Image 1 (tube, rainbow, N blue to C red):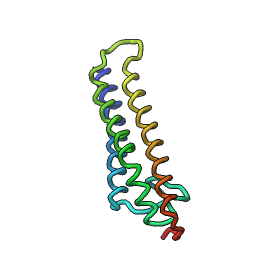
Image 2: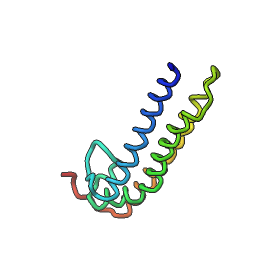
Image 3: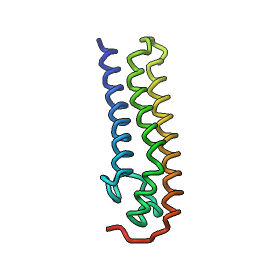
Length: 125
């Protein structure tokens, strides 16, 4: 029973993180989550204007959202891995979080490139 609790906690944390990334990718790309200093791709280029913010997040959405879904799948995989003392439970979590990190960075890079192409220097409200 103790191992099930660990699996459940691990899965809940990783799934919630992935779901939050998916939500944020969709909200920023649609314009529901506007330019701000707390969430999204926050660089000089993306914060330069509302148009740059939106262009960045639209360009970043596919990769970022895929990263979030990878974390959700990894969370579900926690229940498939057999229980053993060698730490196999960490494999799907580390793999999923690794894929999440890589895809979020790819999305951020694509977003910054898109924001720079807009080139508007309006101040953040």
